[in-house]
Length: 120
Image (cartoon, rainbow, N blue to C red):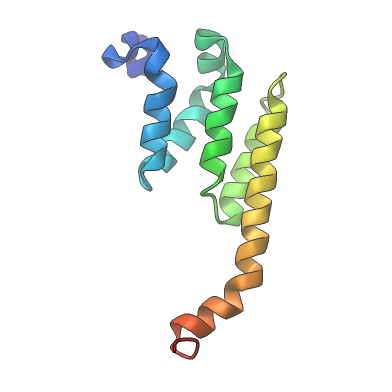
């Protein structure tokens, strides 16, 4: 929270969304940004008065969510953050559900391939 209170640590307000997306692009950074957005959603939405950009970050983050725990976290988060841009967050939920279905449908193929039976 000190980063937010301390003038964004020198980050320009216009750049905060790009910074968050850049951090989220890092496999380890995505968990940090996911936590940060969930924890400080109210503050961020009031401070920047634009939940659309924040919702786009959530949607982008969700593209890499691949397990039920993250799905449940996202679902819980969406339930508590309903506003005019909730449609983007609901799309994020659809993305995660599709990721899980795709992974489940391809699991047998992955196991066969990586166990050596699927390689030529």
